[in-house]
Image 1 (tube, rainbow, N blue to C red):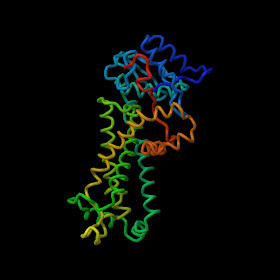
Image 2: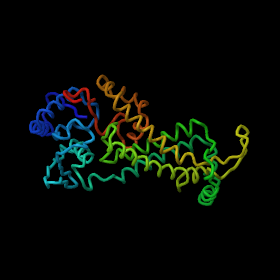
Image 3: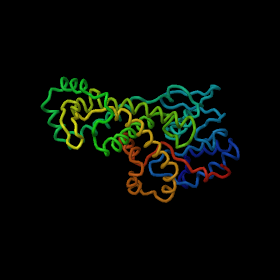
Image 4: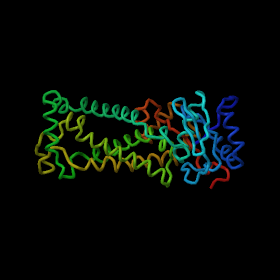
Length: 335
């Protein structure tokens, strides 16, 4: 989404944006005019007014013919024609949005468009730490197992006795049908917000969007496997699979392991994640038009709880998004 700069403020971005719009033609001018009606949210990305003629009006960029190249402070980016646009430090935030757009459409290629794995791993570590900390603080059995059992030997025993042949792990509905899908959606959001090709995409039925969300689901599946049986997992810290006991209401024994979470976490998490994207696309813009107060925006975190949690893990406000957009109906002449 593109927003107008604050009234009375002249910035390098505004100068560059005005030049880009003037050169782009009437369609881009109309697009920018329509989007200018939306005030920026607190902490939103700096407006990107340098719009390419063929890419305007489409976040997917499947039919874009324009070419865009930027040079960041750390790398030089060139387009297919070899052109380079040098970006000053004051334009860094604007160029981040342009970079996302260029990576999405394929106009920019190279290292800058690759997935940023170090932030992904660090934010995943933060999330993993929060999960285990919650289990240790709230579950006396977890604390007892962690302090009384030998770590490695118990972990190996737990994995060896994991019930791979059984679907259900005998956990309550709130755990496997709510908690685990939310875990999958959070890890998917961690991946997306560190993928230049996918972080600024909005809910839309096109190849770019679905490829991005499927890649995020694949990462969520890997994280889920580590959570269940990895070296820092429920098997190693929670000792799931170590103790077998009889459950009267089930009428059988259990060790609280099963295959279902290897599937439910990424697949249901994929659905949850797409659902939050749809909320961001169709519901939140009407709220953002009227609500600018940071406290009120924070209080709306429950509408997109998984994206909010992923934002906290990268030390951003819960309502922050890597891009914002005007609904298609707000753009004059765009159907």
